[in-house]
Image (tube, rainbow, N blue to C red):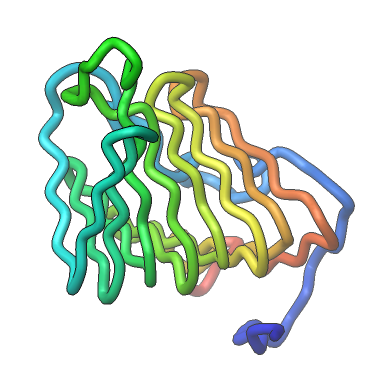
Length: 170
């Protein structure tokens, strides 16, 4: 099922390109500065919770909302994967895997997709399936987006389409 594009003008359609140079003056790579290490509290609300101690996963489903600092993640289902399950440790989170109607927001930045994985160890966010990214008046879409939260780099792949605001007259 394709999401209809809300964008009327396509300025560039490329196979793959870095986001930062394309987003324009003053724009940032999305979600940079999100601290995925240390003791950052993560809050989760959902309609249901299932826990599998053998795999080290907690599965939240139904109207899931995850809060990490100023970022919000919403999805139909989110798996929380813990580090070192074999050793019996379940305090540190390894990754968050989101399925269905995935939306990340952080201030004026928003990204939507069918699937996303936030790897807390690698400090990397990968979103795939009908990805739409908006920052202010700029918008990008493609099939996959990879953001290195540590390095501040990002790439969108898969028939990329974009709208860029020049700033003149806005």
